[in-house]
Length: 294
Length: 275
Image 1 (cartoon, rainbow over the protein chains, first blue to last red):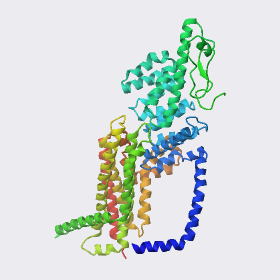
Image 2 (cartoon, rainbow over the protein chains, first blue to last red):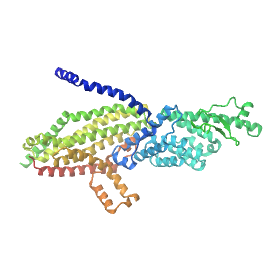
Image 3 (tube, rainbow over the protein chains, first blue to last red):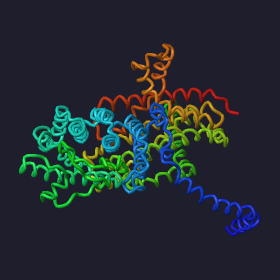
Image 4 (cartoon, rainbow over the protein chains, first blue to last red):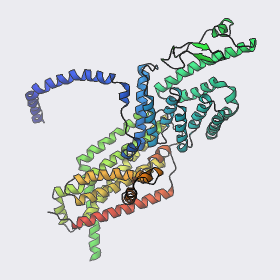
């Protein structure tokens, strides 16, 4: 043992003139290298992915693992964007690439719930690719036959975005049958027409935010939920005004002057709320970061 | 007289099995591979990255790791065991004993196969404990299918025992370790893909392929080992029901296929010239 350490010491001494400059070179390289990696364009970070058929063949008996890894990759990428900008997506995420990878993940493991949940989160709100989102949910329902979340998502997409209440009711019924919860049956019937879309969205977002374990996802849901709650408070003030005066207020300022609204709620996306001539409450941010003044 | 010979044969197979097991436990490659198992305690930490299926992800990770460890063991132990004996000229001294080559070969195979089952048992218990731990903190939407997890590990072990038989077959015709190691890895990849290729070839999209290629693919599908049948991970992770027919057919398949591979290996080994 002593012989070994002696030899090591002699070896170190002999080669120190090579090793020490190399270590200095390494240290002087690693700092700019790390900086380069940090500032590498985010799209590049998502990387290149081979065709799904190739992945299916190469992943052998590890399809579930590769599927989960793909979802994680997209989640980390998106999470990184959200965290860097504190939930304000200054750099537009590469949505087509994210969608491609999620689709590849469910081809590898059609049961992966993370993939459907994440796809619903980004495809629907951020890019409004409802056809793609609903097709993906349909695909998932063929496999996850016990899962009420998928028809619940689909029902919401049809009701809120597509205003297709017939389809929405069908999916809410399906979700109701799977859970046995009366909430969905109510959603399928009366609620869809009566609650209006803000109420519908609030109930959906609270369900989604409650189950969200990932900080980045939870943050995006919470912000949206706050925005919609603000819209709802304005809407109820507007409805109270209309009941008294028999017509819509001219502006939100009028609502405040008449005492129906104490103050104008803040838009968490940084925009300003206003009222369309038909009474619809809108915001200049369009419920997204970075779209102010468009 | 004949009966006596047979008893002797059985005894010597048993001895070879013993020697093989002892050899594996002393092997450095084995120690290295088992080190990979130390990653299992990380499973609960990594599975927290999941948004909606923490327990499911922990099952996926544990089963994937077990499968990977057993793949390494099957390839290295199956591919190097006989080659190493020949390299060290150990076979000469063994085969000069009153023991035929077939018994030697079968003894080696049985030793490794037994070892694979022991490893599966040990790692399977660790995996079950890990999943139990995770499911306590993050109860899944559907109850964990414990039996399915046990079945998944057991069928993984069977799959790798078949792979060991294939590695032994390659060892009997090769003079170096290249063919046993890389040949076995290739068969592993091909065996996992055959089902998919077969389904593609017989799908409407596959009809555009030339007829000859389709026939070849179908022929190879029936000849090459089909490892997809042993992959019960989906059933284990998402609690999908297992069918009795599927289990029974797969057990029959692995039994017959392994015996065929071993008989070919024994035939080739008996005729091999050893210098």
